[in-house]
Structures are given as C-alpha cells and as structure tokens.
Image 1 (cartoon, rainbow, N blue to C red):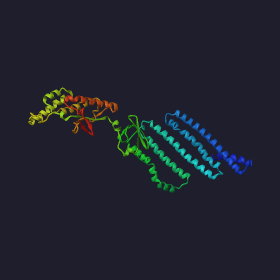
Image 2: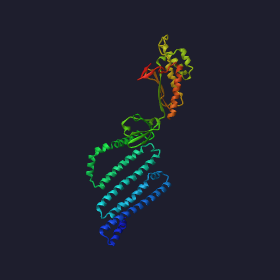
Image 3: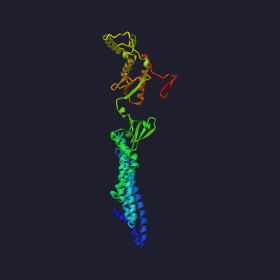
Length: 423
C-alpha cells in the first residue's frame, strides 16, 4: 500500500520538476494539489465504504434470524467503520504528502492518530449499544442493569484510550504519567465523585441483586413508589404509579433504606395487615341464653358447643361459684367475634390458606382495642388485592353489631388537634 501511495502523490512533484519550475514553488504547488487529491480520494473511499458496508450489513441482517445485526444497523456501526477506513488511508498518506514539512507532518500525524483512536472507541461503543439493545430483548436479561455494565466497560475503554493517546502521541514516559496522575488524583476524585460512587454502587447492586429492572420499589426519601425502568451508572429511574418519573442516585440504593416488593411478587401471596378499633366498654361476658342465640351463626356453632362442654367441665371440677359471671372460665362476645373472623378468613376464596392466617388482639390503646387481621391474599395484583381486602373488612364491620360490639369513631362534634381529641 505504501508504494501505491507514493505513486499517487509522487506523480505531481515529478511533473513539476520536468517543467523546470522553482523548487519552492514546486513544493507548495505539489502540497496543494496532493492535499486536494487526498481529500477527493478520501471522500470516495468513505462514500464507497459506507454504501458497501451498509448494503452488505442490510443484506446479512435480512437473511439471519438474530436481531443483533439489526441493532448494529440501528446504532450506525457501519457508518462509523466507513469513517475509519479513509482515515487509515490519510494516516498512511500524510508522511508522503508532508515529506518536505517535517514539523507539520508530526502535528498532522498526531491529530490523525488521535482521531483514529477516538473513532475506534465510537465503533466499540456502537457495538456495545447494539449488544445492550439485543440483550434487553431477551427475557433472561430483561431485568438486568445492562446499561450500567455498558457504561462501566466504556469508562474503562475511554481511560485506556486516553492512556494510549498520552503514551503514543505525546511521548510521555510511564513514570511521569503515573506521577502526574497521583498528584491530581484528589482533583479527579472530587470532580468524578458521583461517577465513582455510582460505579461502586452499580457493582454492589448488581452483585447483591438488590434491584432489577421491573422491580416495584418504594423510596420515601425521594418520593419514589413505582417500577424501576432503567438502571444506569449514576442514576436509577422509577416510573411512579401516577406516571411521573423519579430519578434516584445509584449510590443511594446502598447508602439509604428503601423497600423492594420483588419478594412479595415472587411469593405465593400478598400480605393483608389491617385492624379496626373495638370499644373496650362493649366487651362483656356471655350467659347461656346469649350463647344459644350465637349458635345460630353457622361458622361458630360447633365451636360454641365444644367450648361450653370444656368450660362447664372445668368450672364443675373446680367448684366454681357461677352466681357471679366473673368467676371461673367464660366466653366473651369479643372472643367469639375473633373466632368468627378467623373461621370466615379460612373460607374466604381470595386468601392463601397455606400461608399465615390469624385474627389477633393488639395492645389496648386510648381509642380502643385493635383487632388486627393478618393474612395473605392469593391474588397479588394491586386492584384485585384491594378488592379482596375491602371485601373482608366490609364483612367484619357489618358483622360487629351481631356480637354487641362497637367500633371506635370520633364523635361528630369533636375534632383532632395535635393528636388530641377536642370537643
């Protein structure tokens, strides 16, 4: 190739020499015409290379089943390669054209080599972006932070490219380079603080599988509550349920607390944990006559019979004086209500009976006694989950009067100021 270039660009000077032109004039005219020829040939090489590469890649993409080559076309890989080919020709031609201009030959040679290095990095970048788009189409990688991996690789490549430029172009020794980098390392850390933190956080998030694309996360500090749609080196994007987008620094995922709902989505049920407040003054013992009335409630009829036998046996064997209801063992309307709710939960079709299910009494408060439902819905979809939970509490609230219990409510002529009830 070198001999061919010498023939192309050596023709002009020899032509002028045969016409006995001044040496200085010959040099500058030859330079002008050779530069013009170089521009024309380089453009022709670029034009032909682009047409051939794009057409060839389009044909290959149409005949193959994989979509990777389609993404190469989308990310203009062929176009960047077409830019590189004429610059390789220019790189070989500059020493021949500027043979009589050593100073300028050195400068232009360095500039062309710098551009070739940068253009090579752009080609690699376009290939990596095509690989990213291709992997995102695969279900196996759809929830992986591919963007972060690509960004990390590109940072390493750019650093490598800068080192190559410094070593090869500016002829700086290794000892001088590393000494300079050590001196300015504090400045580099300060300037690229977020990038460095994002890089470390991205690696930890990926290795520990803390967040995936598609995860539902709640991040109270940033007001985020929705699905992760993108994980980059510096930021994580969350599409909230109100269709707004929240951008979170990646390093916040390891420095702050957040909630990831993936465990719930992958489990067999979604937790229902809610309570109502029962007025303590409405809780009382039940006599035999009232128990007979409660036996009409089918879910607890057998339970009442069994408990009556157990309680009567205990009271008789211990000579309990039942002239007062407080003596011995007794059933209460609140206890029966808890049993009724438990049995109701067991027959509810929307709950997962293989997971924890209970109706429990919590610590009494100034507003009443909390009766909490702790169970799991079998349907984890948000809308259906809310319907199941509302259906359960509709029944609980409507059932309360049947057990002579009252639910706490603030009086209509009262209001709350600073968590205190005011008449």
